[in-house]
Length: 274
Image (cartoon, rainbow, N blue to C red; front, side, top):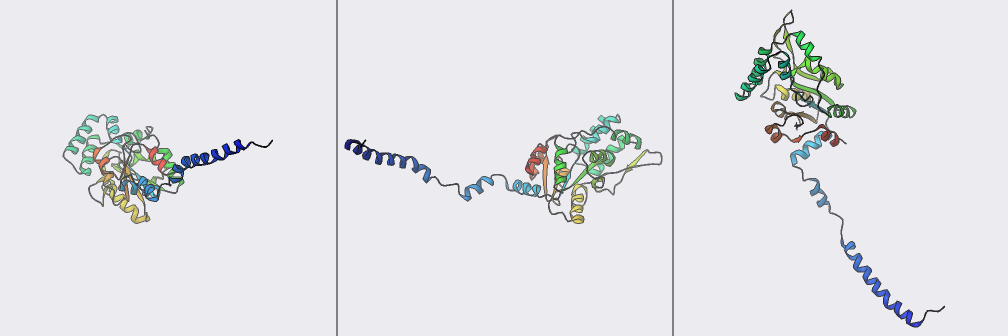
């Protein structure tokens, strides 16, 4: 059947209108350009520069030093040890006095130990209590080990209490830096080893700063990260290449404000490695 002349005229008039409508619909799509490189860069740099740098170092870390009390573990071991020995309130008072007077860490440690005077047998028994690990720390340490990152435990606490924690996390005991107690021949408390760098703080040659500096010098680490909740952790960077404040168990304002990057869960750090 041959189309009528009037039908062909109608079609010829309709096609231009259809094309014009299609152009109007497509024009906005055609004129929308992809985001520029500068836009992408701007979006990725909304984080503070110090945090960006910390995240980069964290992702390329060749060594990570963890504080133990209120970081790797949920609790403060010295407080629980004092409670276990029946002198919890006395030690808490000494701690408050030391904090109010801004005492040197070594003096504060000595005063609390003098109240507790823990015997060797008491320390062995106390260390057998199950470690109260912070949620997520086991997975994080496992992930770091798989990446070949060296993991250290650096604490102002006591080695005999920290060794079982290291064992649970598969951290070699020779990567623990903590305080060593001294006993007499009967196993009674005499003092602590003042040659341990963690027995003091306040300068870059002692405390956690001293440990981080020594590790970088001895092993040549280029991206060493310190992670912790306290002031002695904060002062470790430098020489640590960055400090990540941890607030999963306790948030201290000075640490939160001074940290290069502050997190409240180990899951955040684990995801940042991926």
